[in-house]
Amino acid sequence: MRNALLIAIGFSGFLAAAPTLAQETACMIEGTFSILGQTIKSRDCMQADPNENEAAFKASCDQLANTSAGMGGGRGTITYMKQCQKPAQGICKNVLGSQRDAYYYERSAEDLRILPDGCQRGGGQWQSGG
Image 1 (cartoon, rainbow, N blue to C red):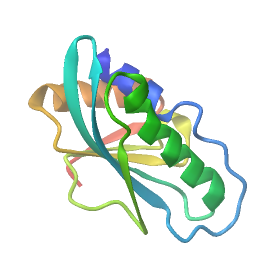
Image 2 (image 1 turned 180 degrees about the vertical axis):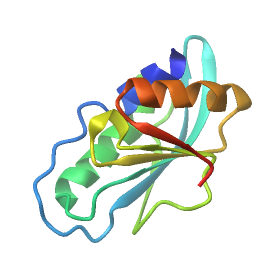
Image 3 (image 1 turned 45 degrees about the horizontal axis):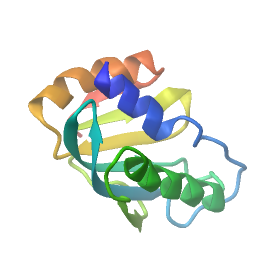
Image 4 (image 1 turned 30 degrees about the vertical axis):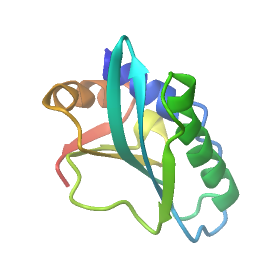
């Protein structure tokens, strides 16, 4: 439940795109935030379709970085790159039915246990490792 909420909070509302070639189609967001009384360290990456509008994608990354600040943590640090790093602990392909993939790193065993269900309930396909 918690991770489904994290996926929904982190990626909903950030899926608008108009087709143009994007130079940097991935953003790594690192930070900490609090939810349900727990402090969570996050190092996750969002990978966009290469045809997504670069300005819209970067605005989404910026909004994601601000999500942790809205939950009582600091603003996440954004690093833009051509693609998300591999290996990851897990990947949610087509997160929330979009053409974006969410890569997860440095997650706890509990997170890795519940992330696949949240991914699938949000319309994505879970891939362990990767």
